[in-house]
Image (cartoon, rainbow, N blue to C red; front, side, top):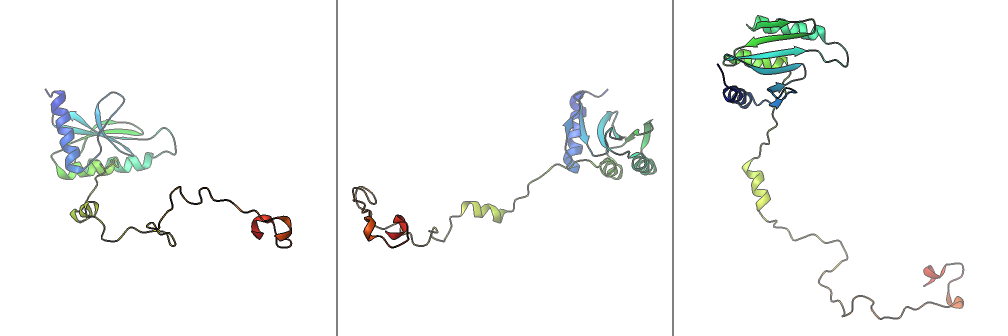
Length: 172
């Protein structure tokens, strides 16, 4: 008799070996989800593969039938046969069957980030270039006490001195 921890450990090893995503279904059991069904630990050293049609969208009955036939040719054992749902058992130690099960249900892969040592050096190494500045701005320019333009009178030209036809702001 298998305990829950043995089943969990085995399905975890299976997921790690084939880099597959592991989730829990509505009942709380750990499964490997896929586009056309899922893979689960059946117990007694066997895993199960469920091929099922989605309730929404077009029927995939022919696709599921062809996948079921491929699984039976590879040595899977039928556990339950339905019109649009099949449960097939396989040996997770058999590499051919295990890879085929993941392929047939279109199991979701676990995402891994691959980082090269050279790219890690770029995160740590300081830049050899001086910091860039917008053109025309000198950050070392001397600023008078009080800031720019503080306490300086603003000249507003009178009506007669402004250029003909231009607004005050342009004439100044």
